[in-house]
Length: 310
Image (cartoon, rainbow, N blue to C red; front, side, top):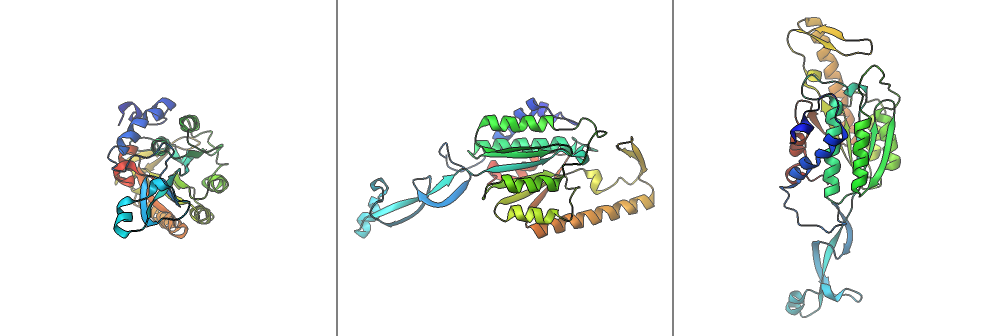
């Protein structure tokens, strides 16, 4: 991973997001997939054509391209047979990226908003390299930016610029007018049927409506949730005093206080159960990404060899 790109802790700029193209390229290198045509994407269609992937051999029919005749099978069966191929098409990839107030935080590594932006950037580069259309919905509590999928490097750069500009520099002026539910509802309007959708968030802002919104998206699309989480959100240290930033200044806590520890565990348990139920009801696949781990390492384990997102 590019050291300069990984140095960002509270905010990441456009240049660092552009440099993550190298991380995407490194993720893609192990892939053993055959080379695709310039217009090829990650999604195979049910149509038969002169694509890259062999499908079957059948009897020649009037109108078939004579260049597709399989002469070996024809000679063996004493009847003309034609090779058919699966036509591979572009698949829209939509990245829903949360940069809201709850993501202006980390106890280790980088702020959650930085990790969200980095994950979105690497996925955007991976999709572009695969020949897919790339679009995004970026929201930060006060604004929501929509970019429809397109297969152009210029579109990816515009998305990265939005990710860089929409990050918070302070929690004090962060609003909560645009929520995760707002972005999911907008995604239903923007997404084409058959899209590959990634929802990148800490999912602290889920509501009773979130499962239904996710399920509606997943009904005609492939939806994955990448949950960015800080270790401190899952388990408190056993002792020591620490502070959490708030709109009116830092709030101090004593980790050795048994009552506080109990209340914290109960809150975590309740939220984890609610979030698990949300993903179960919506049928959305989910994976955690920690603030202490580089996004490239996280995506390598999530996507597998070749960085395949389709």
